[in-house]
Length: 191
Image: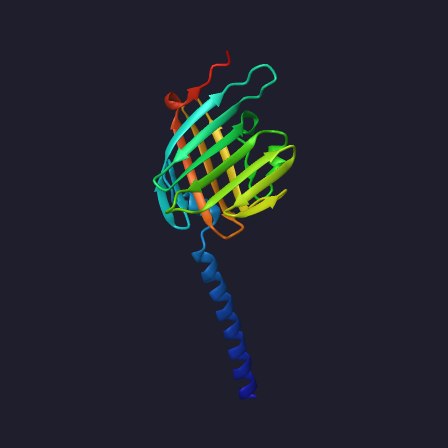
């Protein structure tokens, strides 16, 4: 009887140990929001490497039937990037794994790519209710290159902000936070 009790106790302790190991692994992996919290304004973290960013924002104001757009350019010592964002998307949380449902017929296009030292590249275009994406040399026709992530941008009287994080389908992880004061935002003339 003691032998059966001991074996049952040993099995129960083994199960608890396995559960504990799984929890430890989950604690080590940051969620997207925790990754965003590791970057300051105008910084990007890519697979645990941080980059300071130079950011410019240009706005094409709405006119007639044109809804307008934001054009955001980012640059660091290792890569460059650009975001083309339709004005109606301002304040909308875009699910990067399934962006069509949040973007609808609005403009969303972005790409970030590196120089020889930072060879990673990813891009996405969403138009006509379809998504086209690329991660390094892999093209995703009519699907996203992201397994999860989000993008949101806002523009107030004080500043323009863009926050984005994601896990790409090749398991690269990144987050970025862009902040541009209102007096540095460039407005295009519609004339």
